[in-house]
Length: 176
Image (tube, rainbow, N blue to C red):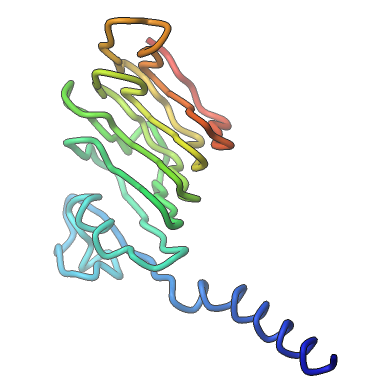
């Protein structure tokens, strides 16, 4: 019985501590050196997608400084990544260019925090943000996005679409 208790405690500690040990922080700046794995401002990725490609550890963090980042559709499927702006949504923008959804979260514990999501477009559901089965978009301004579906009751949700989800959108603003 004592051995089982010790094994359980050790397993729990490994489960709680290992993600913190192996997770990394990656940086994005339009003026970074673009040197993988983008672990400081001098070597920062120039695109969110480049930083996302190396943020493979559970609990990875991507820190993004001022700028407009496009094309949109940054997909986070599975895992747990924090995509965090440095100075907030007024100066950190994900632009779908009228042809892409801005962000998509599916079966993930990922969080998008502090961006403007704009000009996102999709045929169905969530031109700005599509959240399916978990995930969170918070402290964002979601404006001027569209879902161009044929049936409003089925294909709407131009700004944000939540599907089969415990995901959420706390804080921020959605308009147009």
